[in-house]
Image 1: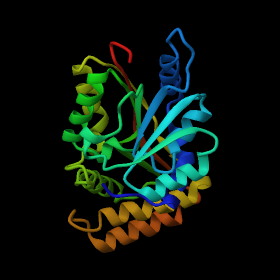
Image 2 (image 1 turned 90 degrees about the vertical axis):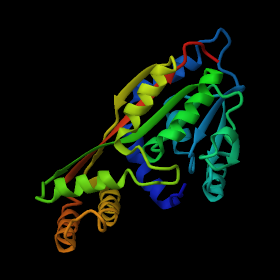
Image 3 (image 1 turned 90 degrees about the horizontal axis):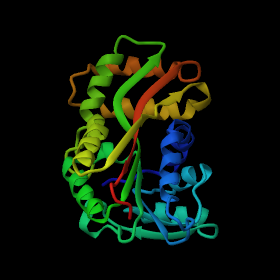
Length: 270
């Protein structure tokens, strides 16, 4: 799978944290603490596609403590950054690994597997293989911030619908895992996990962006325009005009981008 820059991950992290459904995080942490023994350092959280540790930071802000944090990413530079930021404060194991080789992911002993903004990039085959592995160990899964295919801009522009339709098609391209699930990711995960006997909860986690996130909004506009510039039948001049309109309103307009968070708990706890 492709990697992301530290600058982009840092830019989106505050919006991600604000968007996360806090009730699902609390439910997950409560579930992890339901054993008679208190949460102890042998409780293992495996974060797939961990980047610089955004999920780690979000969960610790919301009360997670005394875990072994097992961070897994293909990009060694991102893992090094995560260790630089947290290596002295937390128990962290870093694994540089190709996430697509599911049978070799370091899931042994994991109580919960987490991932943020990952599964909409993934394929059905990846999800099926991962579910088979975690189900065999009765491991929980927390999958946050998966894009749901909706975007609302204010002020509106006549090309908004066409750009969104093209962008959603682009989300189905192979992102390194095979053909991506894109906006269907959460629904697919929910069905497959329920079929495996998990209890699944989902909650909306939309980005609510406005002028205070101008830099993020501008990066988003650039990314969307680049993604739909070819192969989707949008006139380039019209797209350029849409992009300029959106950039002109980045400091004063609003944007809502839909995501879903998912928490799946096994019938028998690990």
